[in-house]
Image (tube, rainbow, N blue to C red; front, side, top):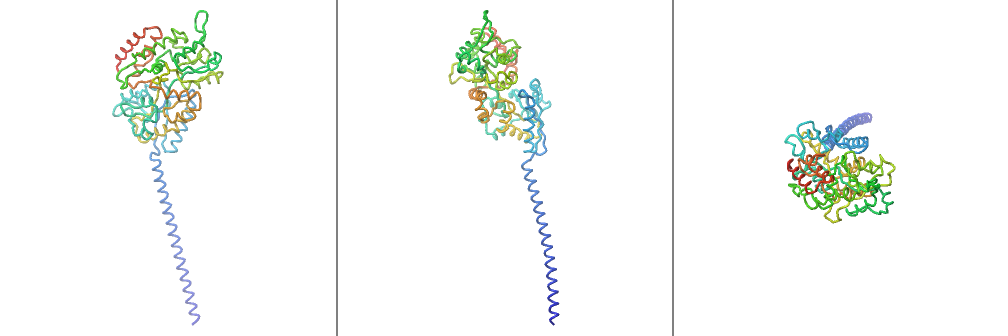
Length: 461
């Protein structure tokens, strides 16, 4: 009886162990399946998250820009980094093309009229390109991008003047150009001059102290030179017009207004410095280069130098290191309504022919972000249209660059938002450059202005 009992207990134990073993296997199998399901779910979630983070993964864009800086390798290195970082961040491959300035206008014109076009481009003469655009070709309105980047107050007014047409934005302003007075500090010290001139009278007085002539009265060392490429004076005069409180056009850009007293005063000053005060050489000769003369020690001050001139000077004339500086251009009298200089800006635009407008806008927002813009400013020796970027210590704590920052605060647009501006200000036969050259050569100012106004009307605006 006891043996049967023990046998029964043994069978029960075996059966119970078998059952427990089976349950354990089933539980383990269920756990493994659950973990697999969770892993699959997590993987799917990660893929979904990645898809949300990189909705344009695999997209390729073409970006056109002009060449900047003295060393092409710097621009290539900078753009390689920016496009690589953008690819890692978004999955969008940006293939950039650097166009030379000689072909840029023609390529952009064709791009706006049905020819080969990039997805995104570095443009200029925005009004002209918008005018020639059609429903299918040309520049795309991107007001939404402007709002995402902070609204119109994000950029200097010259940036808005270039990128905004009839209330709509066709690009995001990026590079910025304004002009300053470059001077030889060693020459100043020798002449006992302790500060840069701040008014026209001070400029004349300073230049007279620095100018040297031979027995025949010919200038052997000029106190002043206009920054005139190819012998053109129009951009120097634009700054003088601003310095006298004058405007090139009316507020609505419907008419030219430089036939004002301020316009006549600024043209007279342009002429007098050469013909009356004899403090600078006449540089109508296209071979004359003010910066070369400055580097050669033949000129003490250059009126209208650009920020990137420092790089050129140090590269071509290393002996000048520590011997030159920059200051805001002098105004006519120092009055509050007088600006220091003109300013130019260029926008980054999306073209209507892009197959990937949303991806293109992502590139524009990234390229025009404050972080990337500051990086490019440093790498390419460029000023920037973004007010916050120009507030960075890179600009404000560098005495040379800060002169341009201060000038930017009191500057006005150099290019007018007109579709025919490239013709009106074309060198050498456009009405405006021609007027300036004629005034320098002694033509009566009233007559020169009248002739210019007639030429502007013939072309139309």
